[in-house]
Image 1 (tube, rainbow, N blue to C red):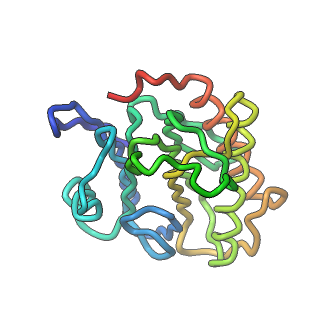
Image 2 (image 1 turned 90 degrees about the vertical axis):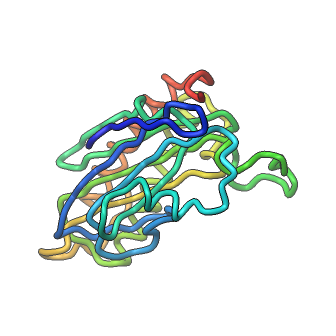
Amino acid sequence: MKLTYRVEDGARLGALLWEFGPGWRMISSAMLGGGIGPRSWVLNAQVVAGYSRMDPVEHLLSLGPDGDGVGMMTAASVDGVVRAEDGGVETFATVGLRVPTWAAAPEGTQDPELAPMRVGTVNIVTVIPAAMTDAALVNTVMTVTEAKSQALIEAGFPCTGTASDAVCVAVRSDGPQELFGGPRSEWGARAARAVHAAVRSGAEAWRPRDFK
């Protein structure tokens, strides 16, 4: 993982880059490189609060390396990234909680004046050194999300996340494929514990001043 800085819109903004190279598949909810497929890098780029550009994918492409990758954005300071490891699974989380959100909120709860990047994000990158079927990848994203919500609630935030959270799970391309990624499967359980530890630590350390 590499941390770099740039000046944009008058602000000093950080970006985290993981360069995996060949031999990896990823599943992600990110705007750039979302879905399931071979990917060689992941970028988590900090943007200004109130981000309103209409070309976020092109913006992320300009910040990342060549080739296929995953690009996420956050208004939280990425130099506060938290890493946790469990049984060979690594998780990295950047936690921004300016507007904690319940997933099943009443209609109209979200302030229409809030741009997506203004609400803050919890961005999670989880790396598993095993191959998985597509179904197991989807199952692992469920597990990661459940562990994130558990950590936030335990840290005292009345929410399941924020309205703009993103996740990326990276697994090996080759080798026997795991069929399950649930919280009681071998790799799913490890991912859940790593995500829980990283998000809870990030949530407990979060402060509004993380937004520049």
